[in-house]
Length: 243
Image 1 (spheres, rainbow, N blue to C red):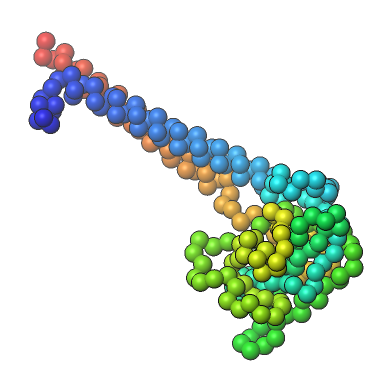
Image 2 (image 1 turned 135 degrees about the vertical axis):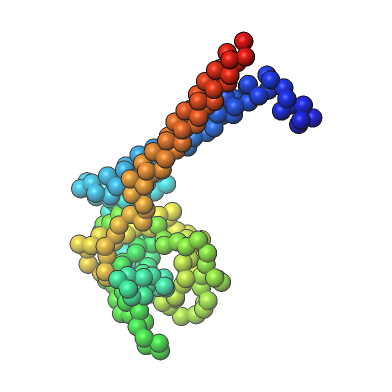
């Protein structure tokens, strides 16, 4: 069967250009996809760098990453969480996550108050004192830190507060708190009080990476076009020499 196809003149004439066109279509689609991703990264960077005023959200489900929001309510100092194994400048530390109850009876909002260095083995947890008076907190819309693979459960110990966790999810924290949570995390503004080290930056590769990938895919598409053109020209010249 295969031998017959390899001897079929029509098959040999049609397969290379058809296969070439298919590859060109795939490569161009991948290049356009990378351009779309680059555009999305640029939009996110613009959102992060924008000096827009803080707004009071009416629908937390419609918020986008790095939207600037402000919420009035009260910190819950008795149920705080330390997210362990967060590196910064060659040191390991914690993110201090403090629940915040909005005044309008929304579910709890998790506030990332920033990074604090980890003490030595056997030393006490960092001082997590926070003002529990009603106040307005401001910051950027974000999410909990994530890893591809997490060994074991997020909360190894379910005892007193504060509790230490290893890359927990919102659902896991909600279960520990025994309360519903809003679907976003507020990254506390660097200018606000009640915080630790805060230098929020988008945890993403820059758009130039995707422009580079797009150029590679478009280059491969161009190479296939040239290769198919050379093949067809060669076969056309061979056919003329036989006549």
